[in-house]
Amino acid sequence: MQIFGKILGGFFGFLFGGFFGAALGIFIGHQFDKAKRMASSGFTFQTGGASQTERQAEFFHAAFAVMGHIAKAKGQVTAQEIQLASMMMDRMNLSGEQKKEAQEAFREGKENDFPLRETLQKIRSITGGRYDLLQFFLELQIASAIADGDIHPSERDILHIVAEELGFSAAQLEKRLKMQEAAFRFQRSGGFSGQGGSQQNHGQWQQASSADQLKDAYNLLGINEDADAKTIKRAHRKLMNEHHPDKLVAKGLPPEMMEMAKEKAQEIQGAYDLIKKAKGIK
Image (cartoon, rainbow, N blue to C red; front, top):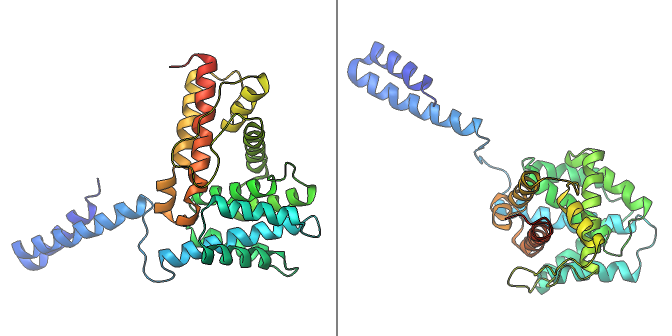
């Protein structure tokens, strides 16, 4: 509890203005303590600069521009890669104007002089360095790169630059690559159904039919297969907290990307349900 400001304000207020001065001093001190408490909790006042809507628009534009840059990493962008980008736009349920903006950003990212590092530094700045938003941005790029079933060495090199500029280590990137690759395999094997932007309820994970599916579920949660119930629950709780769609949007995620956030949360929940069933965890 912050009381230093109230004590100091009351003392000097009484010294110079008696009882009424003390009351005024305590009030001013209370405001000081309140501001200090909010600052220590990570709260920052918005005193100018871009609005929330403008920051979300920049996040949205940069996300698709970086996707385009990663797609160009292998050389010429193929028709398949353009189709995969369009599929991701469809999963977000983008309107005609929003889709046009995403396509323009994607083309911008393909240019040879695209300022990748500067763009990423700006994203880190406009998000205020919020870990979960930066993590979502990175995971979105990984999902885009792996959408064709494989990550080219050149794409991996750029993903390392993306991770570095967003504040993630090489080890953290490799862990997320492993998690996303596991999610991709599980979806392709039929372990997760209901993928798509129009999905209204949680996707249903089918019963594990092979050891590979269960292994992918563990990798998706980022835990070992011999993890105990406490470790499994803690990993699930941490990931769900980091990927909660409403929390992400409240912190600045563009509303257009909420469907992608929902899908990620469904993947995490599905993997957890599968592991719980396999281990008999209540």
